[in-house]
Image (cartoon, rainbow, N blue to C red; front, side, top):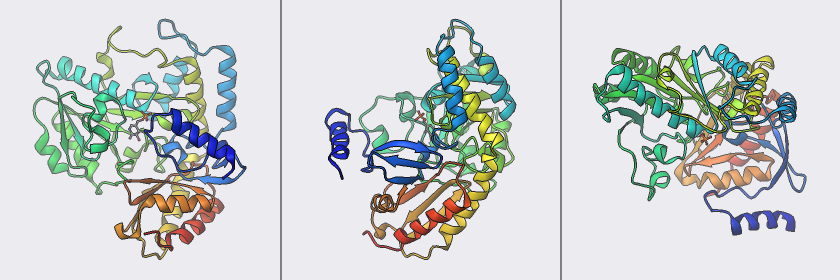
Length: 404
Ligand SMILES: *Cc1c(COP(=O)(O)O)cnc(C)c1O
């Protein structure tokens, strides 16, 4: 390591809150699937900023839209209209088949906004007695880091010593429709769930689970809120992961790739009157729906479709998954994935996934461990077959070694 790399890392450690433990690489440039460190070493990005740069780093069309808009108008607040918001609404509604849109900034804010909206819907439309609304969530969920959201996390690291927390949440196992049926009461307003649990290690529910979930929610007048912040916008090989199950959520949350990694943009989408319960003054955000965010998001959605990234995610994801399954290594316990949302789970005795990620860095691949024994793989959706094969060679070389 050169002295400049050590300086960046040491300076971060000296001044920064230590809430992350990054891999020892300092990045300074990105293009498509590639990123470069300060010393000019090139890496294939197999994390894509947790799926936020699905369109590839510094996509030229999103960049052009951002620069053009930044020259014209960046922020008006919602006290006034701007000439980008209506276009953003129209385009995201057309793309996703939604009727109502609430623009926010971070993913966690979209989750918080959905919780507020479904509670309000519960009181004003469903007729739940005030203060009694219940929301059902799943064990090992990840919906962000705000106080409201970590309060119903089941991960001790995520929630430990951050309480007291808001009441009104009930936790059930993921992938278990019978548990949902049992948990629903007349006061249940919503079931909030990820189509595939990303941070938990790319956990895919049993086939048919969401069909049953959809039926239970409809039968009991419970809003199905799908957190597609990570799975949405092509990551799993379909625009929305719900399409794999042939269902439609009542409320869909998008974030991350909604801006192609340029800017925090999130949205709550609803197919019914949930967002219709919000009245002027009851919810808001200074930056939510600003013209710069809208221009960036419009371009990010456009390139996703125009450049065939969703189909490419399906095709390259299948190739990547097959290739990973073909690797004969004692270290591997299971390989799983859908589209370009993939994971390799290691045998506990194979050593920490972190060691393998550090070794992959030495081979020109940046991937991220999650929960000690899982390597998560989520390259930008613009990856080519040659690049997948290039990555697979390197994964094979590392996974056949023992880092225990
Ligand atoms: C990343 C993520 C969030 C939180 O998004 P932020 O922008 O980090 O607040 C919420 N839900 C899921 C499923 C996510 O992957």
